[in-house]
Length: 377
Image (cartoon, rainbow, N blue to C red; front, side):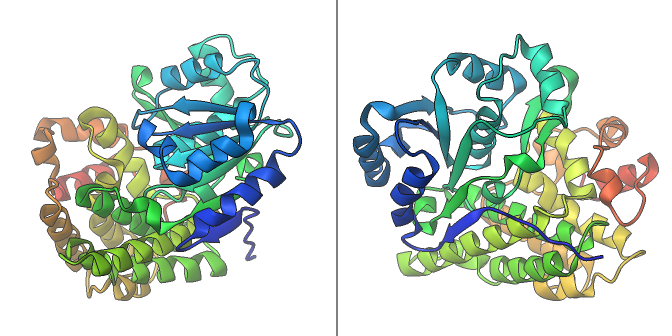
């Protein structure tokens, strides 16, 4: 049975940011207070957000959250700081980490969480009820798709685990994806983010939970990103701007695709790589695409994915990904990120995240996981 659902109001493309004031007014009418969560002070200086501050006046609260891969402790600290503020809308402006923390704060608004351990339990809960606070996602990168999904990633380094606040009540009121906001991204981040989007699309295509709509969106996303990603390295601004627009479109399409399917083995195996070695998430999942594609070819036809990618075989995918990473100044093997060969069995053992590993079309066990990691070592 094919079912696809996504309730987010989406405004995507150049000048999409012009729609933000009306969306905020609709989502937070009257005297409702608004929280603006941003990666850095620079976002607050953007004309659109300066204007929003003038419009809202004393109704606006701001939070600078400069952390990548937000942890439970950082989420708890922000949650405590916002208690009693009466926030009715969160506007999250930034990359995936900022959007994830924004949607977590919105979902926790009005709750009294005692400490980090209680937060750990609460994040894992599936019983959330009706949200007390809406949120709007405004991505400044093109890759995560967090603005159109209902889950948020929070890292738990004390337990060497990745946590997900995952509830269908956590979709954004609206998403505003304006490629103009990605202009400040350095090329390394732009490439890693774009490859993250491609990974979302590839995995949503072969996921056990895939459906007709998610597959159409996934293939469109892959073609859009991989057909334009090289222009991120262009020397003229017009070509780079066109590439940024294509990356934004591709990331949105991929986000819509995997919002209904979740991800699979690539993401599951990537989490310990990011936790232990600080490998950027988009890099970690992209390195895993080719060996997981080889595995999954046992159970599904990967030809449409390869064609969309511009590849004839999984090894072509690997060569293409490694080439893009090197051009962007990023390492293309685990050993270059500080991993030792003796680490691989432990990484394989920790590479099983419920809802991701078991969503893969071919069953993942430790032997297969170890083989995949050796392929990218």
